[in-house]
Image (cartoon, one colour):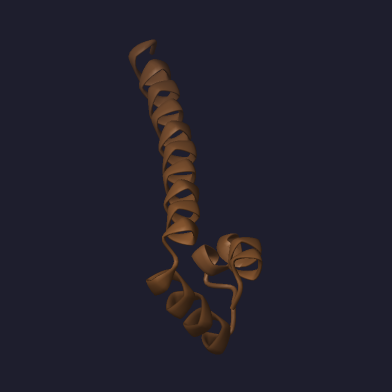
Length: 69
């Protein structure tokens, strides 16, 4: 698998939307390619920040509504 293919499929890889054979190819590529591992790490960090920020905002909104009653 090439870097271009791996990077193109990273989101689907993280979502578990790929066939097991393609996931295996991506894993093999990531074992040997530090550049693609950096892209994967950046994607994971971005998603974590996005989803954690949304959860924090939702929790703050809920807490605000509960304390204003």
